[in-house]
Image 1 (tube, rainbow, N blue to C red):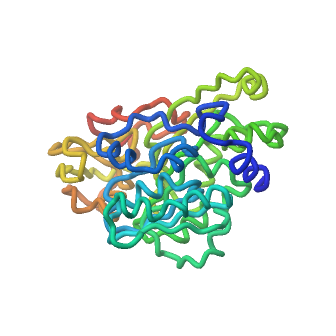
Image 2 (image 1 turned 45 degrees about the vertical axis):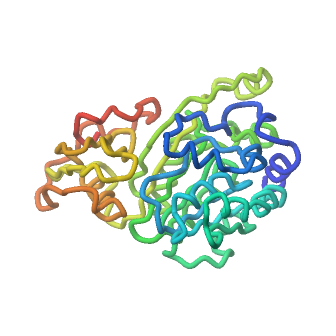
Length: 348
């Protein structure tokens, strides 16, 4: 399917307006601090943008960030501002036409951000074969991707390679398209459905199991939305399958457990993460108000204490006593929960 995807994004689509669904369109509410950054993005770059979510996690200054399927580079350029001159961003894409646009505007964005030297570079390659790009294991702080992994014919390899490159405590923060059931095989050969990020979408539970097998023991859903598919021909082809755009964060932590185990622990958010003075959103279940004691499971404790977020929290308790599992940690469909449902405390 590599050639199908290259052709669709390199030749068939002239710009975002040619898309037949909103699968590859970011309709999430834009945080105020990102708007002035996006206003500086070159029009040719933004005009060929095909993301489905926001991939700008917190606390990126000075970090090394890798973007899988970077396209014309919009996310990379935004991230290059967020990591600052002391950080670096690497974009990986396989489509020559997309890479040409991105590389053409490196200096434009360097000047727009007031940097002396560029802190972003683009590499041609396949996201399933990151081991061929000369990147050292355990060398990347954060990996992002925006509506691209569904296009890969080997999603297991993508996740395994991402886990290999991340530093301990690093995270993969990415948006993609998922289905509420396994997509019928006969749809996978349709170039439009594949290019529109539908035919290659994983069934959500298959994704969760794949992520765990790649080393990401406790995937966390951050946001989700149902896709609006208004093209009659596309609707007829996909039948009853429902699709969602969802953002997940996966932490590379060795001691995470398969479920949310209760050790009587809690955290207090200091309110010190930039742009989040009142609450820190870890995921859809964990909206942690500043100054409030917030009960957490062992996995959430480790995600906060063994990552770049540590200095922004106070930690209460330890792992000496186990109290069982948090109620609600089941295997129901994860979508539709919505950020804020966990604001009152408790793990799940």
